[in-house]
Image (cartoon, rainbow, N blue to C red; front, side, top):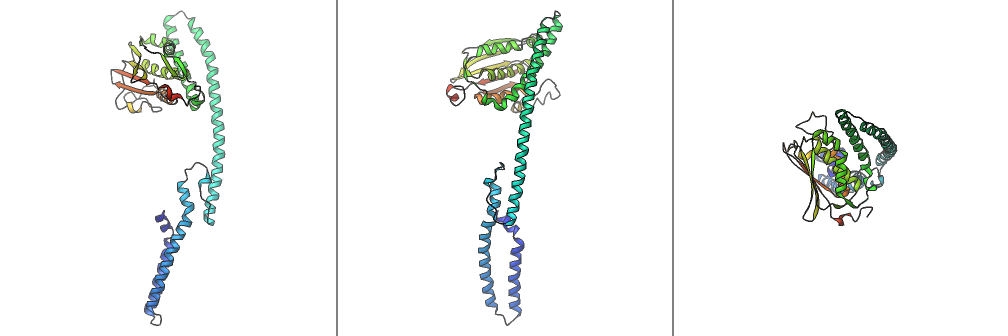
Length: 334
């Protein structure tokens, strides 16, 4: 800030120095003016001018220093009061612009909430004909056609489910209900949901669950497991997916292991990024790059850690590390 202040006042400083040099030059060529006295006057002028600069620095930069520290939160109370006409102009302009931004932000928030409500309403409305379609598919006698229609129905159902939970994630803290739940029933329900897809691909499940009582939110835990299962099924062919639970150093863990194509090592750090699919199969249309991102986001308020390990060409292991009970004391519903 000192450097900026000196640059801003450079013309005035140069003017003062020029006037002092001019006075000394006149005293030098005019013998009637004592040069020693002029040197003394110039020295005193320089001292007073330096003191003046220091005082003006603190007074003139107070407003701008507060602008530098301002966190652009649209709250101008953190900005110092203007101390000059020019600072008043700046402060008035900031106030007007901030007021306009607040108005636009309020309008945009209202529109965004309306769009979100409309989308959620649309998703719920679409689920009604989807249920009717499922009943009609169940009456089809052609086994091959029935399997294909079931698979396409499931894809639509899972995509709608992703969209529904993605919109609810913004207010997930208001939706949590932490309780003791039976993990086994959740796992079997999710397997039943993707059963038609698994039959079509010849995929089975090897379930090895020990302790099945966990402390979590049933709806959001189901969603997380659903994303892990759909990823495992999507990238596997005619194999068994291992689902097992165990305790590691007093912490409950749930593991979903497949023997599919695996993940390239350079892609592993990015698999939870929104929209990231892969670099090795970048042109593939099946992946949306949203499932693991949503799973990770949903796991955070549940204090669940998701760890993914993979060997290219040999499969992928996704592990959920559940929190200990005392980590939920501040969550609603307890």
